[in-house]
Image (cartoon, rainbow, N blue to C red):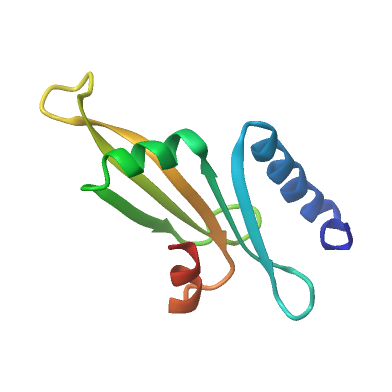
Length: 111
């Protein structure tokens, strides 16, 4: 792919392929210069859990602290099962995304 032609972007390509090989749904968008704009990934098991227990979903973002300088959006849910720490519930991964900008349109795309 022309999109993944630099050494730095090859790492992202390997990441995408690794997620797909593990059964994740992976979707990405490109900007007008054909550069990666956003990437969304979700494990099938997490999506199934979120459909069964949609009451408590938490969305958080970490801002550009990774090698690619992309914002990471993390989506998790809480189950009805108590965790090993008394008084807390277990969490499960619903989805994650890397986005290049922190604008509303990027966050809406993730949702």
